[in-house]
Length: 190
Image (cartoon, rainbow, N blue to C red):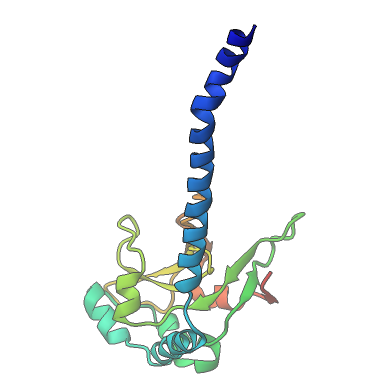
């Protein structure tokens, strides 16, 4: 009887310390990651400096450099958007597409506009199948709004939604023109 109880405890004696060591390793790794994340947070001064650099770039568009890199011309309506300093500084809103009065109206979030410069052009994704163009705004969740560049300066161009999260709306035309898109009713961001 005593031998049988010892055999029953054998797996506990062999694997118990291993299980405890594994749990301690997981806890230690979690604590280490939390400390690393906390230490890598930018300071308020770093956040302010990043925002000020973004704002300087946003308010000082460089369409000539972007067009030279693309070897195409951006639409006139996009250039006018960047000339309107109050419009380009707009952040955190949704555009509601008129006529989409179903059970759930379609809202297109705009977190912020992207600076019109080479740095933004090189940081933003390039869509081979769409050709040359510029991602002029972001949703703040990885998706962007794109407009085509062309050989001749167009008055305007359709707005294409590039969804890098769910894939459901990737490459979808959301508005027939940038002018139409920017004139949709604005709502506060959710």
